[in-house]
Amino acid sequence: MSSPPTLPVAYEHIDPLKTLIPYLLPLLPNSLPLVRRIQHRPQSPHSHIFATFPPSHPPPPPPPLSSASTTLNLETPPAPPFEFAAAWVDRSCAPETECWIFSTWEIRDGHGNFGAFPTSMGAGIDYSFMGKEGTGDGITEEARGGLLAILNAVAELPYPLTAASSLPSRRRVDGGLEDVAGEEKEEDDNEKKKEKEKEKEKDILVIGSLHSSILPLLTSPTDTFTAQRVLSRSSTGNDINIIDPHGRGVLARIGEPTYKFLIPPSLPSPFPSPSPPPSTSNAGKIPPLLLLPGEYTYGTLKREEMAICVRRTAIPRSVATFSELVNVCIRYQHHHHQPEPEVHSSREGKEEEEEEGPVAWAFLSPDGSLSSLHVEPAHRGKGLARAVTSKLMDALIRIGEKNGEAGRGEGWMSSDVYWDNMGGQGVAKGVGGREGWVCRWVGADLRRVREVWGKRGGVLRGR
Image 1 (cartoon, rainbow, N blue to C red):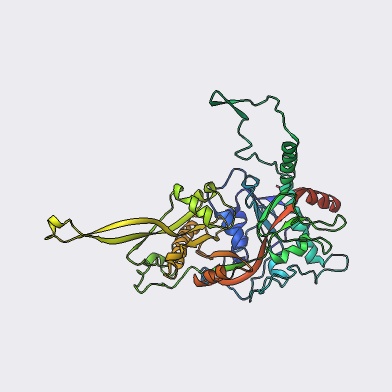
Image 2: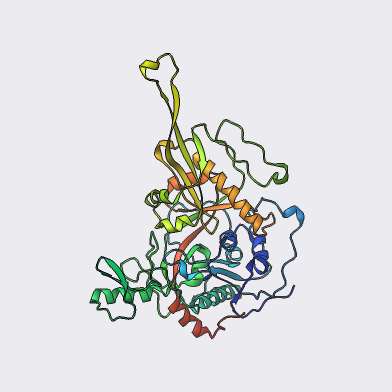
């Protein structure tokens, strides 16, 4: 197999299911978040997929039939065929996560090994492999160059209008509204400052679930970091990073560490009743759906019920975002005995059902991660979290079947849990989660990316 270009060039992949996914699937589970994001449908018209090899590059040979299974190697990361980086990006997703990135560096540098998570946040960034000038060996610089090439390609994309900013300006007249687009409007100093702040925020690219081993490639030891619990695009406050202008860093925001749990597609039933066996055609692939106790039933959330999900999650999400995601809920049917009036005392009473609404739910994020899993306190300890997760896995497997995953890692999910959230870690382990690696949400400063890229004299991007 010929090698791809060694110069850092970002190529756009218009049909990534054919030109990029074949390279990512053999690198599961490390590539899992990006694989799932590319597979997610429907895709926004503003989404772009980049990689540091051209889409015309010959695809790798198909894996042997024996490797097409739901078993992933969680002990020894697979060796990549060559060094490359790839990313999915959609600027219209702002202020939520706009980008997912995978680099073979996650496997090559030795930090991608699977094992016990640290029990404290610590410094979080290891520069031990970097030289005195903040540079590394050839592979290190190739990995960094590939990441910068992709980020620079993102910086060159037009910034799409959000749904709010694309609406015409309007004013209230006689109890109604009329358009005032094009008219001069007076703004006070605060409004002008807000507009300037919004302009600055356009240069912050929110990257989700970034493998912690990539941080040294995009930062400098002389940068000042203050980790944010929930990543903010704002340039004000005391919890932003200060990039050393003489260094090599391009990250202006950095979130607190989260632990990536990998959840296999087969879960034991938490209930005494046996689950129905899978059909012959899908034996060994689709996990059996877990039977629920009699008073519970599976369902999906209605849009009007999602406001409670917004209140129950610590991560900023909107009803609009939740409504676009695959979800599963469990509803509680309360059975109570209703006696007949005395005049009919000779007749037996009757059972009535009273639905109390959803008591457990979870969403499938676009990157295939288990999101906003929640069980109401009164219904915990009954295996409902595992049941919801199993039901979502079934949906995820069917998504993989439609998008050509061909048995490689089908049904695998992930869950990102804050480093100090012991309860959340317990839930992840309770649904079969296996410790993977440490990742963070970060904000790349695209103005800084352009500056650093310009000093390198790099190529903008290929097609």
